[in-house]
Amino acid sequence: MYQVRDKNTQLSAQEIEAIKVTQEIIKRMADNSQKIKNYFLVACVIFFALLGRGVVCLGLHTYLAFCILTLTFWIMDAKYLRLERQFREHHKAIVLGTKPYLDDWDFNPSGYQVPSTIRTMFTFSQLLYPAMIIILFLIA
Image 1 (cartoon, rainbow, N blue to C red):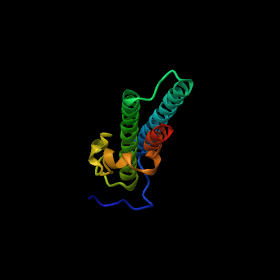
Image 2: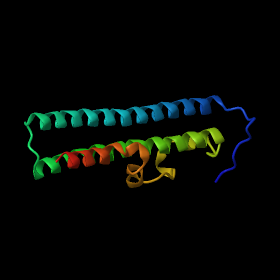
Image 3: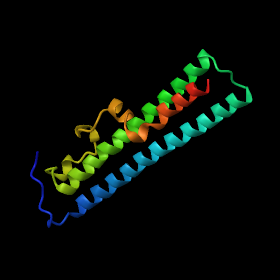
Image 4: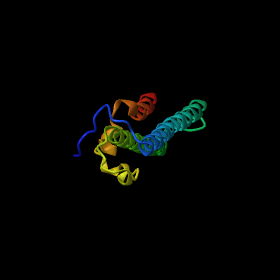
């Protein structure tokens, strides 16, 4: 890796601007993740309300549809969470000065090592999705 800059070093105007842009990207990724969770909860409330009123009957197709819906939201949320973590690593690299030149800051987070999407799916913040599947099976 590259040498870390001294803590007393002043950041240049371009570095400060790059940090601001990166922080905005991180905020958008976190907002997208929260929106995915909100849409999923709304879909669950609608599904369970229809289930409670007898509009939807529990069967194999119902279980399968709910599991596919849950898995879709779960994967999308995990991808946004992973991207957010990658951009946080990018932010750290800018602040610590481990990137050699400003030209190399292409805001491509794929070069940073964070847990894969599958591993991200099984973190604490992602427990909402398997919990809903368990609740559905407990209702039946």
